Image (tube, rainbow, N blue to C red; front, side):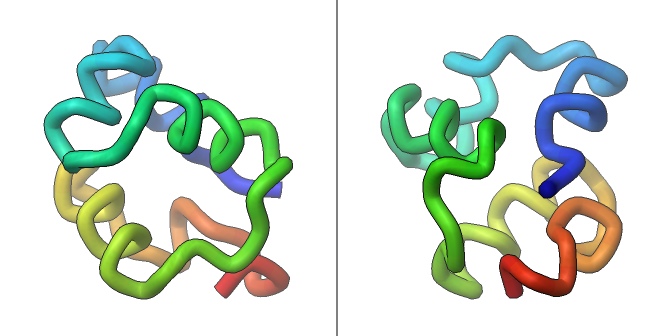
Length: 65
């Protein structure tokens, strides 16, 4: 499980806004949030973490890294 949705909402981003700003599809972002896609690349995890101003560890569970 990850914390993308919770942190995204805390920061005031819609799903589509965050996806667009980090350069991935809304569908892929949705799958990441729901946990349907496991093991995103380090590059994608880093982009999400930077945009949400959190560490990768705060956003992603150890099982996903």
